[in-house]
Image 1: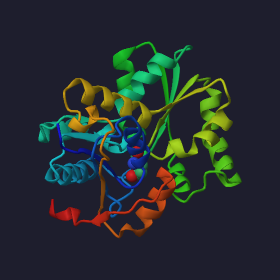
Image 2: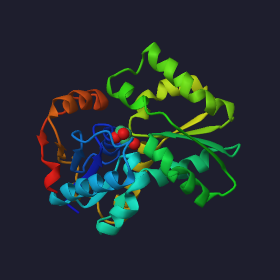
Image 3: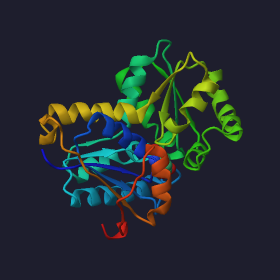
Image 4: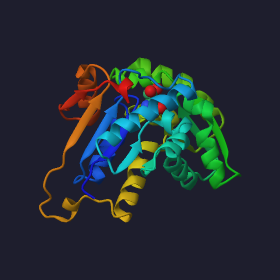
Length: 272
Ligand code: DGL
């Protein structure tokens, strides 16, 4: 189907998911919306997060997207059911793919989950894991400082290692063998988290798992763009929309994706 895929997030973090989608589905057009004007969502109430996310999807629908990827863990954790009630478009969030991968990966039955305050408070990962296997033990921890550290490029600083050691000691104490990175920004700190947790712990990147699940659905449901079958495949188009000035988004996006991100359009999300 020759329509774009829509991806949205509270800000720039969802580009870690978009990056995987670009790799797996290079022939697809993508419309990305980052709600930078109202970011962060992670400390907000469910009502506000749901209201914001409903507007974010409305914006994507205006661009006639065929499929919506909710890249934000916070929205996926607290608002996805409401979004599915409001809109009939096929939609995927990051919680179930991340939970599924963790259930497959654990050997000792002890899984850790880290995320924003809203994601952890919702218990969505634990519920999703227990739907798959009620015997598993889930240990959840909010690590809110990881978001600004990743966004500011503090990915290799001693301060980040100190904070990571402080946060993650409780995960080491409870002897998990699998840790879900339940936030868009955490994959950028993966090497720090891996260093602190040690080589025995499997890290699950929910964004990566979601991109794989989206690839599967799009391929199997006849939603692929017709240029997917053409050789050589004509280039696809990626468009970015943000709800405030695009300069910071452009800088951080360029760092997240490792290439220049331009063609960013500012929109007034309050009108949706
Ligand atoms: N995108 C959010 C998430 O994955 C992190 C940033 C925020 O708090 O808005 O939970």
